[in-house]
Image (tube, rainbow, N blue to C red; front, side, top):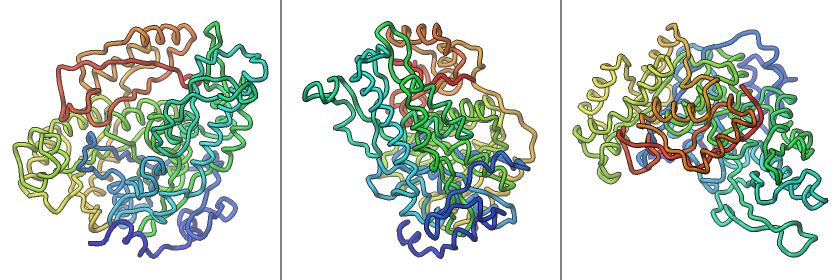
Amino acid sequence: MKTDIEIAQEAKMRPITEIAAQLGLSDEHVIPYGRYKAKIDHRLIHDAKKQGKLILVTAISPTPAGEGKTTTSVGLADAMNALGKKTMLCLREPSLGPVFGIKGGAAGGGYAQVVPMEDINLHFTGDLHAIGTANNLLAAMIDNSIQQGNPLNIDPRRITWKRCMDMNDRQLRFIVDGLGGKVNGTPREDGFDITVASEVMAIFCLATSISDLKERLSKIVCAYTYDGKPVTAGEIGAAGAMTALLKDALDPNLVQTLENNPAIIHGGPFANIAHGCNSVLATKLSLSLADYTITEAGFGADLGAEKFLDIKCRLAGLKPDAVVVVATVRALKNHGGVAKADLNEENLEALEKGLPNLLQHVENITQVFGLPCVVAINEFPTDTQAEIDLVRAKCQELGVNVALSQVWAKGGEGGVELAEEVMRLCEQESSLTFTYEDDMGLAEKIEAVAKRIYHADGVDFAPAAKKEIKQLEELGFGSMPVCMAKTQYSFSDDAALLGAPRNFRITVRQVKVLSLIHI
């Protein structure tokens, strides 16, 4: 059996100019990065003459057994193009940091991949490096402001802005810097985040233009004064230079699938856990270029999809026409208590025990958000007919159909059943509803997500979190959406509680504001 890398390396790619021509793009709007990669002028979204259908791909809570969101997304796009539907794939950029140069899942797998896969998983077009540089410029300017007499009265103990790098280096998460005497700055506690989880990435993903990007960057809250007032990147004087560093990165990246269909890869993947998906610019550009756009939200639907819908769709005015929830029989058996080593054996009892995880995600999509949904079973050779039939039966009890996805082995051909169901759902009338309303308090919004999406009994706020919420609301931040960061492996905040746990509470230890951008 060929590996993903071997399959990708044998791909017969077409020149990226030909892929761009499929979309009706003229030469003046395409900036080639070599033969098989290009950037598209982001300003095209302001000339959009049409708006295609939007399809969101999400999944059950992740397990070591794997789910296959990106593989399903790629295969679905290839299937819809094969059926004669002009379809655009729109994905997040993989992060170099967690995979250390080894192929990550964000490029798909098997015969449902985006290529050139090695480039995409490594330095690609340099977007991540630009984001890291912009982030660290602000960090340097904060410390320089303190060094030059501290005119903004910044409290070095209350600097909230961390440095970043595209490498998950645990040794640098918490450090002390500024040592070695006066010339080297002010000694203080500091640390590094991974680039793709930085606030600059989150802002980058939500920006709709250069001017919008600059405004969002200027509103970053990066520190507090000795008397507790927020200090912004604009006050530091960093917004203009940060924007300049990001101006080329703002143009979405165009590549292709193994079947030579167009794909935009831009932004993400974590974006401060804001939505785990590509940029607003990429999504809107795709919608203007194709009749259908397939995009993806990271982690399980309780994290990625919730943030995609409650944050990205709210702020960008987007609404999915259909949602795909990806699951595997193996992962569901894992949720039912089967060890990874034993997942190849049929186990209907464990499958039934693990199925509530899938069903809760489906109910959240259809009942909380009000969107039409299909379950895609990403097939493995060890799946039995009895196991697949059980999943179908349980989903149909909720009024949701199941489609068998064989895209890993067969590419677009293996996604036709899923494609046909997705196109059917896209013709249904639906209206997006949110988990919480804009005018609710911050604590109420947090409780709404915990109770309605996670099915927790309630939320326990640590004293520090209560104090932070009170301060943020007094500063006028109460109208902002909330971005919940917790373990991706469980609906709860305990990674060991698999399936669909009940009788638990969520503990909130810290609350902080990321930017002064209001709804």
